[in-house]
Amino acid sequence: MNKKTFLILTTVFGMAVTSCKKENTVATSGHDNPLIANWETPYQTPPFELIKNEHFEPAILEGIKEQQQEIDAIIKNNEPATFENTIVALDNSGVLLGKVASVFYNLTSSNTNDTLQKIAQNLAPKMSEHRDNINLNEDLFKRVKKVYDDYSIGGNEKLALTPEQKMLLDNTYKSFVRSGANLSVEDKDKLRKLNSELSLLNLKYGDNLLAETNAYELVIENKEDLAGLPSEIIEAAAAEAKSRNKDGKWVFTLSNSSVMPFLQYSSKRELRQTIWNAYQKRGNNDNANDNKEIAKQIANLRMEKAQLLGYKNHAEYVLEESMAKNPENVNALLNKLWTPALEKAKVEAADIAAMMRKEGINENVTPADWRYYAEKIRKERFDLDEQEMKPYFSIDQVRDGVFQVTENLFGLKFKEVNNLPKYHNEVSTWEVTDKDGTLIGILYMDMFPRVSKRGGAWMTSFRDQEMVDGKRRIPVISIVCNFTKPTADAPALLTFDEVTTYFHEFGHALHGLLSNVNYKSLAGTNVSRDLLSYHLRLWKIGQLSLKF
Image (tube, rainbow, N blue to C red):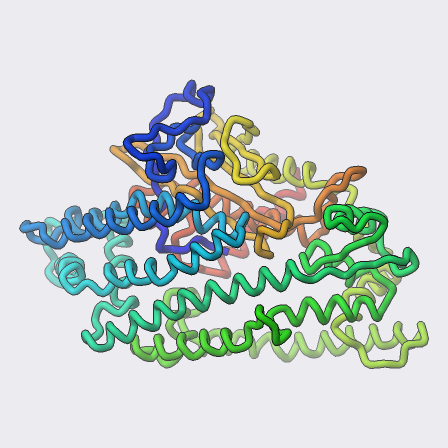
């Protein structure tokens, strides 16, 4: 999962190493809003302990105002448009907005609350309008196009751009075109309306999904209904029940770290079916959190937007900047996979049905049966029990293994530090240095599920790397996951899938940490996706880990 590409993530860096020992205070700089003030925390990381919900909206609105003034200055520049006074100036705009928005949108994903969700809903159309005010600004686009044409058509010798500069110019021009800069005034107005509606609908969809996930709990009162479940899964369910004031019971949730082990090990078929149905029907329960109509609206609006921009459909629009390029290539690949994958699935389904019949179950195989019987068949045929692997995969051991692989590959070292502000007490913070001791970046790791965090796993950043006055400003990177939680009596033991996810997200983190470019919009993971080489890189790191 990547960052919202709109966010321009910069703050001022330049503190000496000794400043790390200072108190985590923030200079007011004429503001009582800590988001607008200069951050005097170590490495100028966000001062989470000072930030309140009510600080976000005024800070973001101030950031919007400030960036618009910067855009106006670019447009009103009487000098002919150049790479520096137009493309670079645009890339450097929006520092305050990027700084604040990076904190806000990361928190709405990883540590949200009702107030933050309401603020996000209020800000969504305003942020959409601001983006459109930039992307659809005719005078600004004229300057961007002038520079682009000078380079691509005019052959101006003064535009002897480096490969990185060429990429920035190309990306900037394409971004304007793909955002509707060439549309008529009438169509631009239509696009503004579509973007505003989509911003709210996408937000509402995510909020509903989180609400549905948090609303459900499978409460087990009889110990017999825990049959088949490993002891650490039972302990985790007891701890979850206790946290919900249900002492003496066991609670399973729709978090992947809870529902998936239940589906894999519970011998109670009816309960497996119950939690599977709940997992599949999130947002499809005809209640206040229902997403069916929202999904239809999003699909229709995306189609309308894509066609307005000159594409057949939303897939064609999205894939243009990816490795696949178009839906036809995607379908060609999927069709190649479909036949052998279907045949394999039929063989596995037959194996599962045969084992079910041995147990006296003469019913059709359901999705709720699949994980449970696949695990039993694997153990029967190959004497492979995932539970026997988990003691080797405590989260601390996996983390140390990831660090060791990274040190062997790249010479990086990781040191946990406790003087950085955190947005939640479960977050750990790390200094990342090169083999010569040079500080590379700061890493946050937030690994366990909670009701304030959306599902899944992703890498993000609170600040992307960039160059300022010829010096590298370090990135502040974050990994957010929903792994199996520790209990009072046992550490967090990860499944093999969770270990794979750890390596996957850490691969993204390395991309952000090792970034070393001159322009922040090209930093870290702000690149087109090349899925083949991307997954091969992650696979290679995983394979190399087996050697160390």
